[in-house]
Length: 285
Image (cartoon, rainbow, N blue to C red; front, side, top):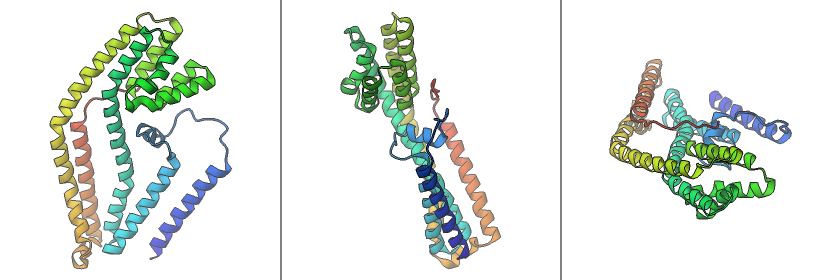
């Protein structure tokens, strides 16, 4: 009981510290590099939640999971194991959401580049062509280009708006397009149309090949995830039986859970590494 009270008190003080720091302090300088959590939230297109709020919510969810499993099983090692899973689940969700977002955008980028080429050939300036993608571009990419158009109308600085667009897109393909447009704007790239058409053709071929590979390996990956989760689901079902779960409420039981958790985590990481397809690295951090 004292342990639970201490955990609740610690999380409460943590939330108060976050609230006080965000409410009382004013930032005088913008950090050069954002945290990994902030970049992950940006990649997952979650803008209404800050990195600190995400960490605080994860801490609260971890504590609640620990308390619920502790109330069911009365075994601290079991509750700690599921609390650890609850701590890892939000970041795993963000990674999957970011991966789905990248997949949707990889399919949309060739059409966006084609629309951009058509707008430039029609005589529009580069800022007008980019802002026009908020209307004529693919639905997955309209919001960032709409924000670019509003920012360009307010500031008139094409380079600054392009830099903000690259951060907003958080996409390797977007970095390539932004770099090509910056070069064309500064040195007058006469081959911009050919460059963008070549990029669109390459992106279509890459998206088609990647889609075929992912479709073939999806059933294997899903089966591996089910096999990984099955032992822990069984453990959660056994948590309501006091006579069975009592074996884990000891040093030997904690060691079994620790070894099992390590094996599960290692197998999951190995599965992800084996099934991971090569990804492009961002040119703009």
